[in-house]
Amino acid sequence: MGEKQNDRFAPEEVPTPLELFKKIKRSEDSAEHIVKLKKIMIQAMKEELSARQKECILLHFVHGMKQNEIAKKLNINSSVVSRHISRGLRRLQRILKYGCFF
Image (cartoon, rainbow, N blue to C red; front, side, top):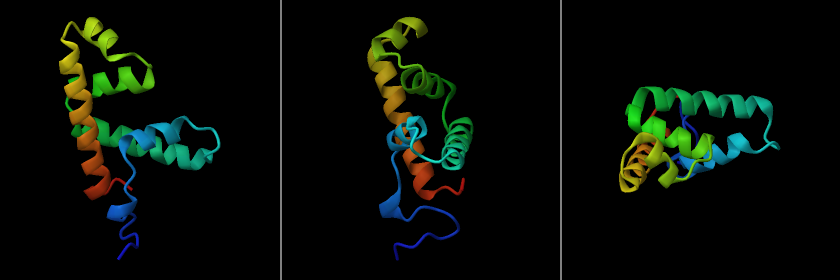
């Protein structure tokens, strides 16, 4: 137990989507590692998230917008933005834990 199988993370090693977003932004990680993380996140987001979840997550984490700014831009309530982000991140967490994007 605890070993990587089929290039998946062992359950106790599964990074959260937030950790992956942070790793992608850090410059001390190797370029190859960053490219791999980006590919994993992009593929998971394309295949597994709703259009609105993707949009909210990208605006928040990539473009640095606050939830109330996203809400105004998309003409929706900020609590809905929060829900899209939370559900999208949980979905990505499950994909990283059980999926085989690696």
